[in-house]
Each structure stands twice: as C-alpha cells, then as structure tokens.
Image (cartoon, rainbow, N blue to C red; front, side):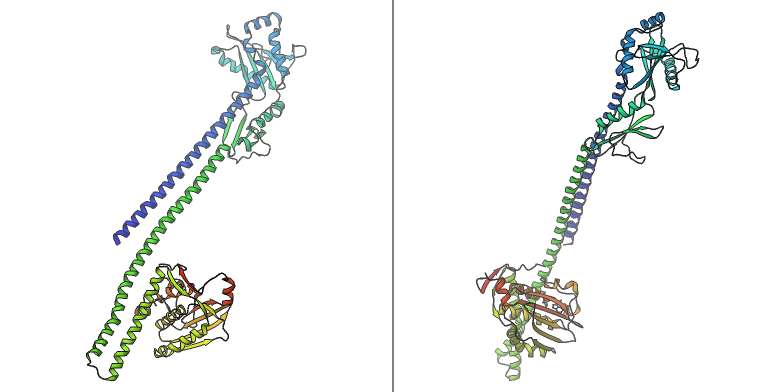
Length: 564
Ligand code: ADP
C-alpha cells in the first residue's frame, strides 16, 4: 500500500514536472518566434528608411544627371578662351536654378580662392540671361561650402576616377567640383545654396508623410531631427509627439549629406508584430488552460484515488464490524435458547430473563438487518417509496408513546410538543419511522450526562417541521455536511465507545430527499444538536406536482448518495 502510494506520488511528480517543462519550452519557443518576427519587421522597416535616405540623395542629383557626360577638358579650354562656359553646362545650370531646392548658384575657379583673397573673382549664375556675373562678395555660407569642397578635393584628387565630385556642407549648400582627369586638376567649383524651407517644409515633410504615415497602417512613426539644434524638423504623423524618453527603434543618418540631421523611428505594433503578439497571447491562453486542466485532472485523480482508498478501508472495517455485530446477538440468543431447551431452567424469573435476552437481541438484530437492507437498496439505486397523505402529529405521537418508557428507562427526559392544526404532508410512513428512529437513536447514543430529548412538531413557511433536540456532545460546524456521508463518524471519545458504522444519517438523508423533504442541523442551546426535518404541505405539493400520477412510486436513483 505504502509502495503504491510512493509510486503514485513519484509518477504524479514526474507528470507535473513534464507538464511544467513542456509549458516552459512552448512558451520559450513562442517567445523566440515573436522576437524573430519583431526583428524581421524591424529589418524591413530599417530597409525602408535607408531607401528613403537614398531617395533624398537622388533628389539633389536630379538636375545633374548629364554632368558626368560633360567633357571637362573641353570645358576648361572653352573657359580659358572665352572666360565663360559652353551651352551644355549652362543647360544643366538652368535646370538646377529652376529647381526650388536650390536658391542660387556660384562659380569659383579652383586656383582663384575669393574666400581667402577677396581680390580674386567669384561669379553668380543669372539664369534668365544664362550668364555668370562677377560679384564683389559672397556670404559665409558660400565660402563654407567652397572651403569644404576645396579641402576634400586636395585629399581625393590623386586617386579620383570621375570628372566631378559633389560635397555637401550639411543641409546648407552643395558644391560640385569639376575635375580635369588627364591633368589631375580641379577646374573650378559650382556651389548651390540649398533652400532649407523648401527642403524641409515642401519636400522632406511631405515625403515622410507619404512614405510612413499613418502609423496604424504602416506600423511606424518617423521624425526628422536636427541633433545639433535638438529640434524636430518634420514627422511622418502629426499626432505623434517626439519625446526624449521615447524608446527609439531605428536611427538612420543621410549618406554624405545633411550631416546634422537624423531620422528617428519608432515601430508601433506593426501588423506583423501585432499578429505575432496576438498569436503569443492566444497560445499562452490555450497552453494555460491545457496546463490547468491537466493539473486539475492529476489532482482529481489523486483525490479520487485517496477517497477510494479511504472508502475501501471503511468498507473493510464495516464488514468486520457487521460480522461481529451479527455474531454477538446470535451467540447470546443461542446460549439463552440452549439453556431454555435443556429444561434446566425452571425458575420463572430466569425464564423471563432469558426470554427478554432473546427478545432484545432479536430487536437489535432486526435493526441491524434493516439498516443493511436500506443501504443495499440505496446502493443499488432502487428505493421503493409509497407516499401518502399523513398527519405527522399522529405518526410522531404514536412513536413517542411507544418509545417513551424505553427511552426514559435509559435515564432520559423525553418531551413532545406539537402545534395545533398541522396540515397533512405526503410521506412514506415506514420511511418516516426509520428517519425518526435513527435520529432518536443518535440522540440517545451521543448524549453524556445531560440526558434530555425534545421532539417538536410545528409549521412554518408552508412546511411541517420536526425538530429532534438533544443535549449531547454536539456536532462541530465543519462536520455538519460530512456526517451525512456514508461511513463518516466524528472523532470523539464517546463516538469511539459507541457502536455504529456511520450509516444511519446517510440513510436518513436519502429517505428525507426521496420523500421530497429537507434536513438540516443546528446547534442546541446551551449544548447538543438539533436535527430539523421538513416536508411541504400537501396543498403546496399538489400545485407543484399536479402531473404526479401515482401515490405509489418506485424511484430509481432519485437521490445519489455520495460514496464518501
Ligand atoms: P453511527 O451513529 O452509526 O456512527 P450515523 O450516520 O447515524 O452513524 O452518524 C454519523 C456520525 O454523526 C456519528 O458517528 C456521530 O459522530 C455523529 N452524530 C450523529 N448524530 C449525532 C448527535 N445527535 N449528536 C452528536 N453527534 C452525532
């Protein structure tokens, strides 16, 4: 038995550990899956933002598509001869000056640095006349752009393979240096001042909105931020405020231009992430429910096994007790019968004593057999009931009169109190007698020094109630439901000494319910218990059970007696 128990515990533990491990693994892999889909969504968004910065770069290059095809050696020659540029370059410049992204265009020959030596010439392109006009001075912006391009070309020139190089001075200007590759010489620099209002307000802000807004569809918000000035220049969705404490998922600079500007992006549950979040939650719920059910099933199995073991123990004990209790009266009766049969006892007093013995033991035996038969009937699910209208006061009074002297002989004060004009109730009178018998038997058995039993019959709430009150050992609150279970006996020194098998009240409850009644227990004052059995008035029953066809019925499994 102990080995089986340990084995069951071991398997239970292994099962539980397996369930926990499986759950853990599942949750972990779901989490991984979710993380990788978030990563994939992030990579996808990052690519989109990179693509966007490349598009911005192309936007600046738009007017210069033909520059690469220009023959810079020829340009240089032409410039040296005419102090002017040929038409094909001018065409490019006209196109650039029409583009609102640039505000003005300047030319500075490489060897004549006006910014270092103001006596050197510098030119501004006038797109209407298509002429370069020499101007006395230029703004710092132009000089900054030119300076940057000049120093970059000094480093690059030796290994450079193209005939032009574009250098950005952040978002302020763009300088195109023209290179004579044969002579490894820079011919001059064309500086295009950038129009920041157009660039930000009319181009970047619009493009950001076009490409990344609204976030509930694209799953991303993008801000254009000047990190030197710490300002937000444009955003993909007006409703989303940029905050410094915001967790930024992607940071992307522009390639070789707009140095002080950066794109910040936050991924808002994109459809992929939302879907994988939803699937994680769904899976977790299903998994949780599965674990709970599995755990519940294991616990249930464990509890049922425990109950079955207890029941088996009870039944084994019950069988031993019953055998003993059947044998004892039989042995007494056999001895008394033998003595009488021998004819050795002539004394009338002793004959009466033996007769009494035989009579009392027969009663005891009958009670025992009745109980066993009742329980057998209940267990087989077939209780026969013959309900008929009865006056409970008649039944109780009859019982009282016939048992009074016996109960009083046991030292009890036995009282009966009956309310007048009690209506009839529909019960099986045999069942009612068994109920009364068991309750009074218990009241006698479980009383110590205070020996008093009160029977009360009264009406209340359209029911007739029978209260059996004793001054015995009482029943603690926790046990008031338990004691109706089969084989249940309270742990008490008096109970231990008292003969019984925990069957009486289970029979009582079953019979009460079979007769459509109720039973409950209350504590008596100052000590003891009150068992109250109630049956509805016939008038109430008639309305509730108009369809009931017979007074005599056989009830199959009407009441399911709990097995423990
Ligand atoms: P039995 O009396 O044969 O043990 P019952 O089913 O009649 O079986 O009662 C179950 C248990 O309920 C008893 O063992 C006892 O512990 C408790 N009990 C029943 N009636 C009373 C009572 N009137 N006062 C105190 N305890 C009671």
